[in-house]
Image (tube, rainbow, N blue to C red; front, side, top):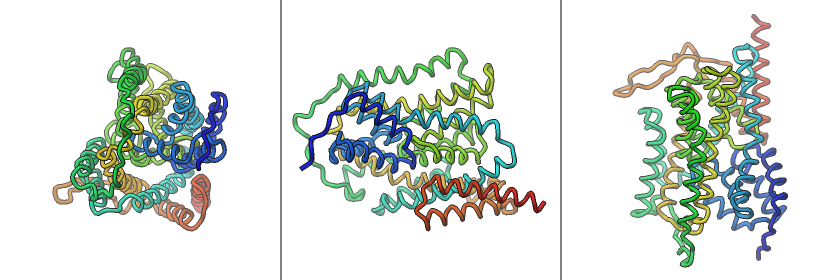
Length: 441
């Protein structure tokens, strides 16, 4: 028999989530485990069933599930005020650290030792993404249909370069249809009946969407009114606002979409800089999706008018963080009152199951993209049949990157070290290689 939940005061909620926000390293798995220990095991604010029920609900929503779970816990005990406090405290410490690191990066980029340091970090990121790919594939691809969806998504992105939102929505639509016709193809469990007296809080949802949507859009509207539609702040803000509504699958999946646009379309960043940003996000507390703040900072820093580069970068980072995370609050406040009914929506679960399978293909594409641009300094587009495919120029192979990536993969596979330890070792190894090459030269 589970113990009755302890009701936290608002002050206790603030102190607890300030602590969680400063210690939430290790990606969503580590962050959720930290919240479980603090909220369920140590304080007894939720039962085990309540925690898992809320976590499953957050998996149905776009955006960082750990931050949404924190927002839900605050909302559960103190309404909108509690949700805002818990969700913001989960994000703000990491956002401040990423901003400081982004500023340092923008001033130090181009120095030889700095490039060597980040070569080690990028090599570790490639190994970390590869590990995430294997872990998610083992857990998610448990039917032939799911394996087919993953392969089709990989091909759509890597070979056909289709837009990320279109691919994700297509996988969700397929899962929605299959759940109604052949649910066993997705290995969906039997549904229980939703409580007959479960309320339908249409008014609460409508108010949350109206108010939350207006608050979300307000900074973008101010940028458009003052700087116009051609300014980088408007373009980056609008891009990340669109990303926020299709960001299923976590930072690794979203990074494919960000790289596709930020590197290939807008040219805000060079290919290797995307890996640099993820490496910074891996070493800081808070959601990994904070890597988008790094992109927003550099995009504005490099096209700053009418501001100074530093001021433009800080505004860009703030705007990116706002439009990325504000929707997560909106989803919780709008749909948390429906949590009992959503847990019994088979077609919705089918869509989520198909999207999760597709995310394996998305992360596979990200791993291939990282490997291509890390291990080779030059690539070229070649036609393979009717498809233009980026292929490496073999004389541009970077043996240092390959050596560092191998070191990171061995450390991850053979030790129980955490991400920060692996990143630290490969960064130091990158510096050592750089110094050794200088000495030999």
